[in-house]
Image (cartoon, rainbow, N blue to C red; front, side):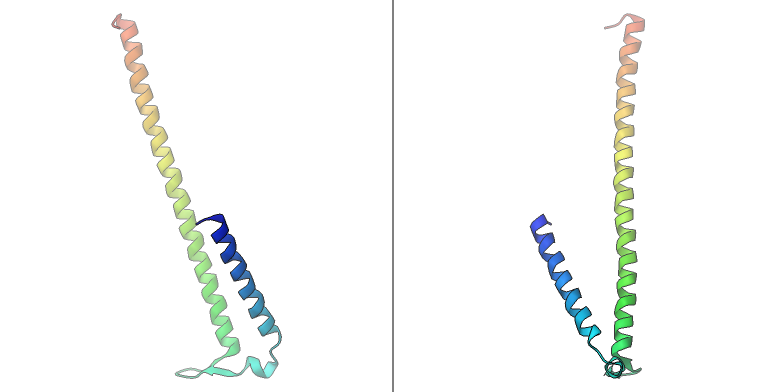
Length: 105
C-alpha cells in the first residue's frame, strides 16, 4: 500500500473515531440505556459499544500475533539464507584450502 493511500485511510479512521466520540459524549444516561436491538437478548447503546470495544481488542490481539508471526518467519528465512551462504562459503574455501595443501590448482 502506498504511503499516500495509507495516510488517506489513517485520516478517514481518525475522522470516524472523532465523530463517534463526539456522538457518544453527547448521550444522556437514558440514551445509553436505549434498546437498539431486542431479538433474543436486549442490546442497549452501552452493550453495543461494549461489544464493539471487545471485538476491537480481540482483533488487535490477532493482528499483533499475525505481525509477530510474519516478522518471525522473515527472520527465520533470513537466518536460513545466511546459513546457506555460510555453508557455500565454507565448502568453497574448504576446497580452495584443500587444493592449496595438496598442490592442486
